[in-house]
Image (cartoon, rainbow, N blue to C red; front, side):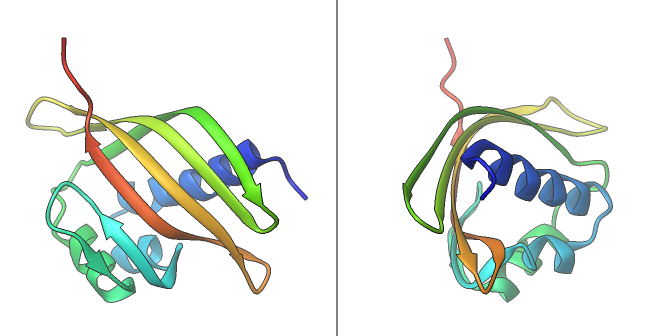
Length: 122
């Protein structure tokens, strides 16, 4: 099995690429069917809500992330904690912290829980 960090990087690299390419269905496909998703707006459950969330993002959005911590609490489960800057073409970036719980579902690593919050300032 790949290391916990390798799993997080693989999944988040594909997430970043889908967002930058404005492919909300591709981004949503990286999540489990019943994923809990907490973006910077009210939370949702399931892929359709996730696809809708990403479809509403502005053109030019780019999530630039750096892995801070990873853990593997059980076989087939990986946790990643990352710093992410959501950059835009027409406004200031939003620094945030992201926690993802990634699970092995039928030999595919999928995000089961996604929680992002603005990074503290100061």
